[in-house]
Image (tube, rainbow, N blue to C red; front, side, top):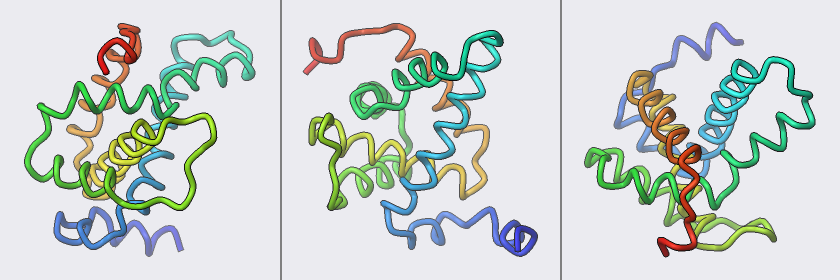
Amino acid sequence: MGERMMQQMPLTDAGARNYNPLSLAFIGDSIYENYVREKLILTHPTMLPRDLHIEAIQYVKAASQSRIVTQLETQLSEEEHYIYKRGRNTKSHTIPKNADVLDYKRASGFEALIGYLYLTGKKERLEEIIMYSFEVIERGESYDEER
């Protein structure tokens, strides 16, 4: 089955546009978290998994992703902005109790963009955005002050 799936990737831009934005966010969440985990394990080889998990939360929580995409938005291409807005504006039936609704919507848009870039095979751009997101988190700017 894996071989059959890989033959269908990468998707065309038009093909990716046909996906539900929350489906793009579903895969985007996984891809982004994998990059975060890889970064943390490589930079902290002796850190315990519990501590790695706590550190990873700083990168993947909705407030952080919202801050990332707010700073990134002016750097997005027209197509990337379209995908982000579709992900941000799609109604979700669940919002985590600890997440602000606006942060959660922006985070969904960010994850949809990551999923879109992954599924369309735009690895260079995907990694550029992920590296930028790491910089935003590591700068540690207070998002609350920007709002």
